[in-house]
Image (cartoon, rainbow, N blue to C red; front, side, top):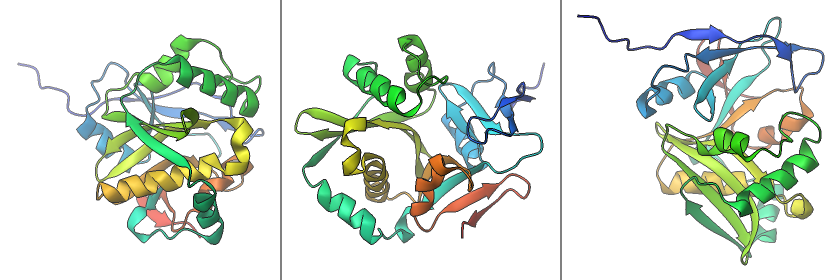
Length: 238
């Protein structure tokens, strides 16, 4: 009788140019894609700095660089700044809807507009709906969507996971023509409210690099904790 494998093997990906720090080389630790990642296992993985892309589970493991940090907000200690309070006030006409992850032309059209505006010409700016499904629809985890609407018009979508005592924001995209509303900030504020209503402690925001301007918005939410792979400890970001 063979012993059932209880922990997945990890593999290192090939090296590639870092999409956030152009002078650095990136690589990831990958969970064996043949392994059945259950929600309980993902709870453990995310608490150790892993994230997911569809059904691919990974953590940065870059040669010569360790700036990528998984970050989370302790939602019960968060207080919105004056700027964030203004964002909430500016968006009092916004409604929020929760749903199951699914492919819809409305979502995909907004996703394409967002990527064309924010990631022109890179790997994210791809019109293939199959890659969109693989990235945001395929999931082995308890996943749902958050929609923000102005009347009936779609403003923003966030794909989210339930994890142990928290929510994890997988990916958010929004109408680039409505940037004056601060939809990215608004979505995180709504996610914090949702986590509190469920009586969770954490909102996981993905990876953060201190010296990357594209990720600077995450450091506008305080307190913010970051995971250190070398020590296995979450510590508050200054």
